[in-house]
Image 1 (cartoon, rainbow, N blue to C red):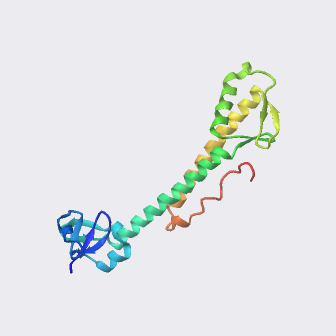
Image 2: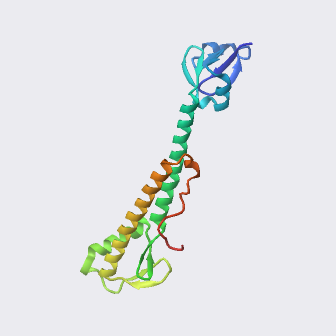
Image 3: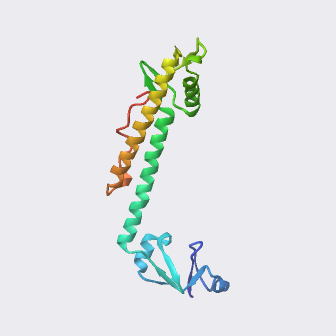
Length: 186
C-alpha cells in the first residue's frame, strides 16, 4: 500500500483504494516530509509542495511569525468593528442632547447645515432619547462640529489601539473595548 495526499482537498488515500490517483497532478504519491511530526502538528494549511513527492514545512520561527500576523489581523478587525459601531450608532452630544450618528442622520444633518439661514423655521428634531428639540442653524452647526470631533477622536483611539495591539506579543488577548470616548447609553 502506498500513501497518497491530495494537496487541493487535503485528503489521504492509498493507491490501492484508487489506482487512478497516480495520474492526477493534485496527488502526491508516497510523500516525503522534511519534518513529519511538525507537519502533522501544524497541519496541511502550512505545508509547501516544492515538487516531486516532497512536502516542506515552515520553521518554528516562521510559523510563529505567521500566527502572530493572523492574530494581529484578527484583532485589528475587532478594533475596526468597534470603531465603526461607535461612529455609526454611538451618537454625539451637543449640550444636554444626544444626536444620531448613523449615515442617514448624518446626511440630514449636513443638509441642515447647508441650508444655513434658509432653514425652515419650526423644525422639531428627535434626539436619541426620544425628546424633540427645536432645530436652528446654530444647533445644526453644533451637531456638525460634534460629529466631526467625534469622528476624529474615535479614529484616533482606533489608531492608537492598533499601535498598542501590534506591539503586543499576544495581540489575540488585547483589550479592544476599553478606552473609547463615551457613546450614548454609557
